[in-house]
Length: 110
Image (cartoon, rainbow, N blue to C red):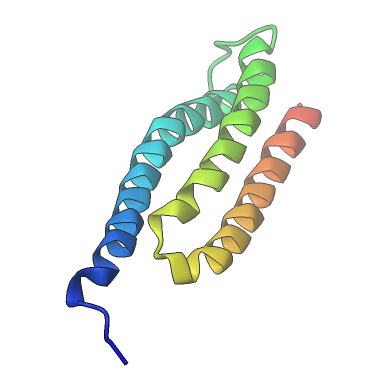
C-alpha cells in the first residue's frame, strides 16, 4: 500500500484559499453599494430633512438595495471555510430576509 505525498492536499487547500479571497472581494464589491443604497432608502424614509420630496430615492434605493443584498447574501458565505458554508448560507439568507423585510416595511409605510 502506498501513501500519498504530503503535497497532495495542497491543491485543495489552495482552492479553498482562492475561493475565500474571491468571497472577500465579492462581499466588498456588492456590500458597499448595498450599504449605501439601504442608507439612502432609510434616510429618505426616516430623515429629518425633506431631501427626497417625491420618494424616488426611497423607491429606487429600496429596489436596488434588495438586488444587491441578495448578491451579498450569496457572496458572504464564500468567506468561510468550506466545512462551515452551509451554516453560513443559512444565517446569511436569514439576515437578508430580515433586512429585506425592514426595507419593504419602511417603503410601504411611507
